[in-house]
Image (tube, rainbow, N blue to C red; front, side):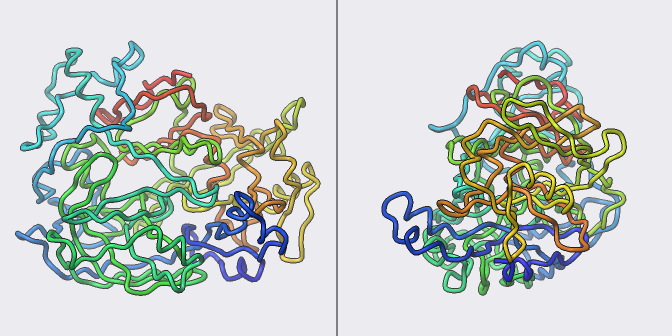
Amino acid sequence: MRANIALCVLLSATASCHGAIKPPDPPSNTASGAGTQGAEAKKPGYVRMPVSRHVFNGTGKWPGGWHWTPPSGGPSGPGGGPRPSWPPSQSGYPWSSPPGQPSGPGRPPFTQPSSSLSSSLSSTGPKASPTSVQSASALSTISAQPSPQRRAQADRRWGWEHLEDLGGIAYILQLEIGTPPQKIKVFIDTGSYELWVNPKCTTSADANLCQSYGNYYPKKSNSSFFVGGDFAITYGTGAVKGSYYSDIMSIAMFQIPSVQFAVANDSNYTFAGILGLGYSYPYSINYPSLLNLMVSAKMISAPIFSIGLGGEQDGFSEIIFGGINRWKFAGPLEPVSIWPPISQQDPHWIQYWINVTSVGLTRPNANPVVYTPRDTFTMPTLIDTGSTLSYIREDLVAQIGQQFQATVDAAGNYIVDCAYRTQNGTVDFGFNRGRMVINVRYKDFIYQQYPGHCMLGVQPADVGSTNYVLGDTFIRGAYLVFDQQSDVIWMNQYYNCGDGVVSVGLTARDTKNVVGAC
């Protein structure tokens, strides 16, 4: 397997991780197993494929002149220039308001704000109607004492979507694109910033799985429009290229017109398209991302989304745009600032880097052990839903591996006994000098590549690299809120005690007032 991993060299100091790496073939007796065991043996491996930076080259114009124009005073191309404020003024976003938020089965209930949420809702306004968009100035003049009805309306300003758990490899979201709608499944990826669809299945990591995720055909949509320009990303083990289109899109209970995205005409090694959820305009692209469009249309109040992956194969994975599920954690969320700050990152490639301040382990029925200096340890690390495993310093991986009696195979992988997945210990990651420690259960941390073959959920970063990543093996233990309004990732230990969503982003850092119900 190391031959595959060797091809996965990080290409830059801020590379993100997604794509697919095929595992070695399972033993013949496993591969021929029946039922669940046989299905598990066919898993396409794990996700880790660095992406190189690329430049937007779109040249077309949108229908009705809806071509992206940066807000006044903003940059004319990707990167540089002042950062737009949130929510942006309508004049900076020249597209019309989409239909209002639909209702339907499967949507988690909204909750009346508790007293602990009163300050977060002090600037709440009524939900935008389907035919109008509130201006930013109107939001700032709302009464400081909103009515219960108005607060209830504000709590509906979010969009929820169930995520499909691909055996711990990746997390999949379904989109509906075009008129009539075409169903497409894509990876969610906090390590990149663009949406693209239509991988080439014949050269993917898993052709059958790839085909099952659907394709988008622009000629079959009455609302599609060819934008133009070249889309190209080079991966460590492959590449994807295509062209830009725009079309109506349904996602997370929202229907958004004229969303720009890339349609691939060639790719290899990846078996699903990707929804990049990183910082986009004005850093990396000069057109509005899905998150930008949701904000401009007042579907959500700010570029904020929350993720709760939950335990592997528990069936509770979800993403919420503009809201937080209070029934997935206990107590207040801890703000962990983007570090290095975005002002010190490459302006063309801003990432969700945060500082890990401790790494340790709690064995079953034992006290926690911390392997790092308590007051001085720092490790800037990318939070990346597009990476199955986590990648940190090799000395720390070795210390963790000793506790699991790991063996390092000829390819350099840390292999452990799958029986550890049934034990009651945790691997622990600390932030803000111990103010928040995320304890990831062995079951969710140890990755079973196929029956009888398990790997540590954390592996050494590439030799000589400081591109550390906390992937899904970490994220399953946490509830995370990605806040581009305040440049913070809010976090707490993941629990599951029900469902109930509240809106955030009405005022800066109002997430601090949300208290978990578990």
